Image 1: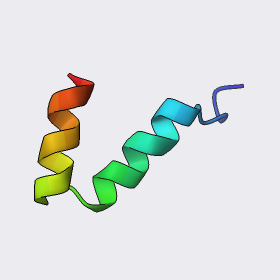
Image 2: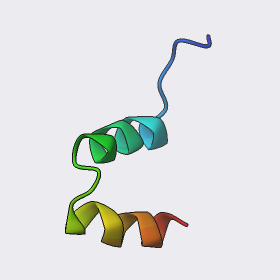
Image 3: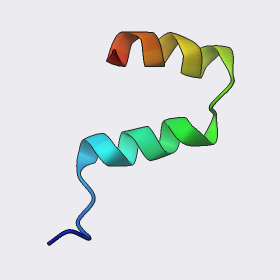
Image 4: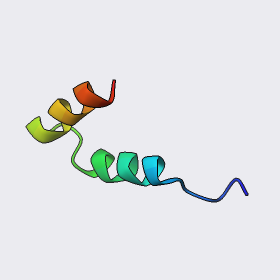
Length: 32
């Protein structure tokens, strides 16, 4: 089902809440 959110997507949505913070920038570098 297209509506099912994967664990990875859930994590990305959580990160999106704190986008712009130093923590997000550090984590986004690790994800890439």
